[in-house]
Image (cartoon, rainbow, N blue to C red; front, side, top):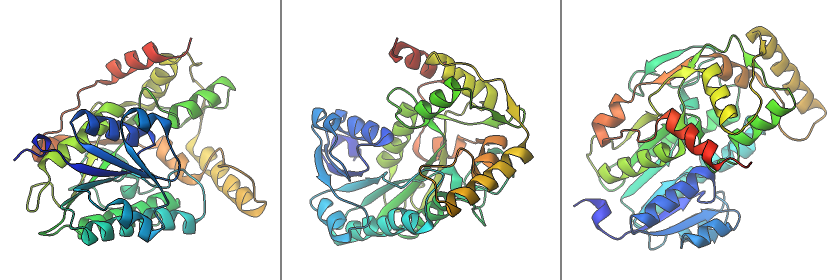
Length: 337
């Protein structure tokens, strides 16, 4: 039976975030009852008819209680960002994910869709040209706790796949679009004060994912997910499938919201050294907020990373519905005058 033909109660962790809200919205549109588990209350979820449970992933009992009566979980919550203590990332991403898996076991839930990240395969400046999760290995010696802890969490989710719990991990690359309150606002702010640069020449090819496509991939995977299914126990890169240069990508996004274009560059070696200095200062003083540059960020910005969408298309029918150009049009139409 098609899972979308049956009414289900689905827990979405991190339902108040950018992708989380898109997941909640899509599930409600498909007739499902949705419970969001997050640390804060989000009025936008009330308007969608989503039940909200406030709590922290590190609270095992709270996570298990939130899953009671549910049929499946979309585990989207995580501590993201480029800076912070390893302990804080481990608590949210590793311990929190273990609690979600335990909740699935406790209540005998049959499906778990996990939002991972391509960063789990990051290997310094090693480029990925059309790679898939089948041939791109996990990264090692991470310089960022986010990538390190998401790798551990993804491995735990995939290892939990068995005859009673079907799991799948999706790795969307650079999610953007209407409603983005994280990535795009930061880019715009830096561009307007003249602090945005390309690391390298800006000609490295990168993949991105429009928000609707990222959510669609989750729904497609969930629809096909079952014990023994082709996608069960596996990870998949997710993107628009339209690799473009960093220069075209960044300036396209900025132009769509009326922000200044970027043309200045900084050599990778200079950016990497600046990242090392910033990391040292932020640790020693310590300074508030995130450093403007880190070694991990320099590597990410300068390296080619684009992925093969054949595996998700083959195993659960994922086909991006919104092109990069269409996404830019939507951004422009919704931009504040």
